[in-house]
Picture 1 (cartoon, one colour):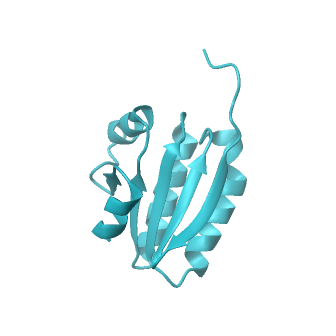
Picture 2 (picture 1 turned 45 degrees about the vertical axis):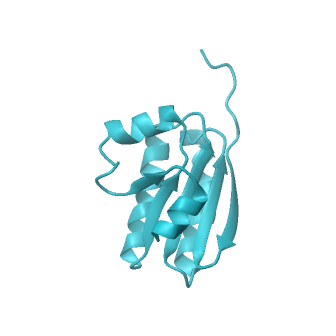
Picture 3 (picture 1 turned 180 degrees about the vertical axis):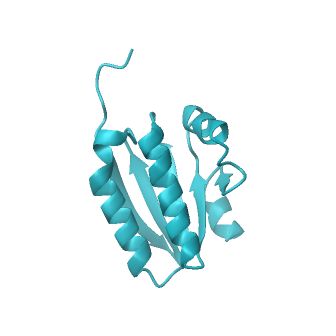
Length: 119
């Protein structure tokens, strides 16, 4: 059993016309407000329409985290953008597949370069 929750952090950076959100920590209910605000603000104010959510530093995701990913996807698409996930750990991938998000709504890429080239 997990004893401690890892605080979620998000770094935003650009690679050409692609905005990358690198998430570290547990993407769970009580951790989401600050990261949601930052990511959604960046998408809404971005002149680029290509967004990658890098989840290599995420060990745990709950239904709130899944909801966060769906809202990021919907916001990007509503602005005629593209969205994908990069290098999630196997437990995170399993959750996303179990709820039917992958590959129905978006793709998962092994690394940033592969995802950027696909855009």
